[in-house]
Image (cartoon, rainbow, N blue to C red; front, side, top):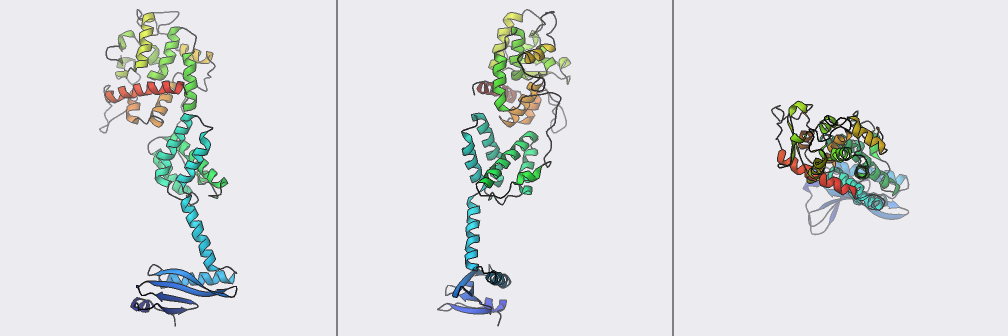
Length: 395
């Protein structure tokens, strides 16, 4: 007679193990310690065997019967259910050991010898900051496209749109490595085409790839034009002012004692006074230039008309002379370079970066920040930025 839930619940342990049959080979084994275990007898290749279904009440009577019928189905197909269960258990254990983090670190180590140090550090950060904390412990073969998208949305929420695309690309390379090493069957990142926001395109070309910034800076250092234009070129990435704001700087706005530039709102796009903290590197460049143009009104006087600021074409022409095309880098592009790398590489607060870019940043009350807002933090940021650019030159 088939068992009932009431019979199972009332079954008490005895001095020796005993069985309660449910029919069709399945029985409940009650042990002296009180444990109740589902078992199923069957014959395979002429031998009697026992299939372990699991403990009660974790495995209910209904589920136990379903598992019994599944075992009988396997037998009808010539498959030993005990062997099949062991295969599934091994596969599950293998999947659990092949986590996204384990595979990701293995892939990272494999690629490290062919990458630059800066590229390695950047990719490692994408993994450790944006991927491992959320899907690192998951079996690489079980991660779905929606699950990966949820992780990438967290990056988008920081307004780091370009980074979200790079993190997606990094995840895709880990999944493809898992495929070729037999630990996954497909790459879920391939299903996310068009799912992420597109990076905002600007009219200004800019180099934002860390591996390309160092070579660019070395080219600026090697420029063989006039000291005025060369200094303007070298200050462009350090100050990341708008080209017009840079070329119209006046010596009266340079405060060497307080190590900063103080630009009146009448000369700024947003019509607000602006302070640019000077890093040691920027201050040294200005002091050197002061010996040549300090008697003039403008820091960068024009070559033909010294009483006027240098031409807006000066920096642009210098870049072209060095072989840097307009599709690769512009004077305005140094702002995009700073905006991207300060956020994504040095991880400074976007609020401070936007303030230093003289963008119309507002506080929680909707009021525009004044010129001294976060000045201490911005001063530290500008020095870290200058030191970082120096480090890129020697990579």
